[in-house]
Length: 346
Image 1 (cartoon, rainbow, N blue to C red):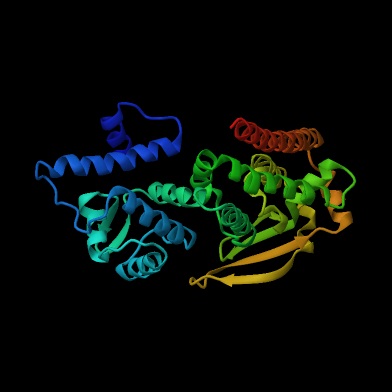
Image 2 (image 1 turned 135 degrees about the vertical axis):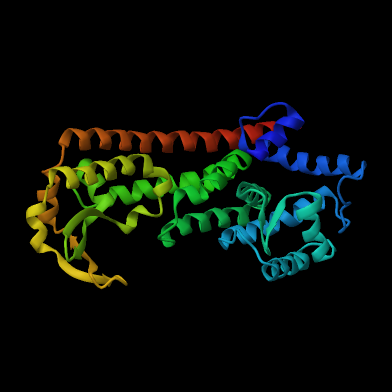
């Protein structure tokens, strides 16, 4: 909320685009410092850097720390990163003075008993997006490939953890974001979906999403509960940013069916205990079991589903995917053509 108030005080409006909002926040913090120091309200900056130099350092620092999943920094971490950045940039400054300025003079960083962070995490994401957008083509493409790889390999990565960065990149770096991230994911998703060995798109969608069931069984002295959930495929992870509007609906439907209608309950005996986790309280334990689909088992399960719901969801998914690929290809082609036409005019 303080970011909004600061921006509104200086510009009397809140812009629609995120990157413009953050640019105004940064400018407001620096201009607020400059205006107040003339009246002696706050200390002058100690490290001698101007706004452009501060931002140059912060872009590199934010990029490195963000992709290391570091959002709260101790002094040692900051010093190590500043040493790396100084070796790559022709900017000299005293590290301690730099840190003091960011905390006291400019208020971009806050210090909570030795734990330092950006005054708002989104500012770290903004500087990271700026860094990526300013990379040369080869390195820019590599970053987007690394982001895609994170979805594939970091099993506990949540979309909300990276969504703000991606939205900023879409605004700041639209062409590269579209070509190297969005379009790449679309093609991968189409290939993965079409590779599912099922004879209908409806079956492909369900089989793309799940490979069986997970039974989390809580056993205690007073209760022996069984909770069945879809066992999601590893194939989902890489392209989740694209397909989640559809697979989220499918997931909610399947969980509701498994919970309310007790479909497939008669297959409970087929579960094989594959992992047991004993809690600190010896009075109960959690047993996690898995049941993977065979072709016969999948067909039997699929036939129990609401075919109208599955059919409609599949149609929406396939239409979206095909349309999005065509529109994205058209955008890339049109952007290249327009740039060439403009250059041809000189």
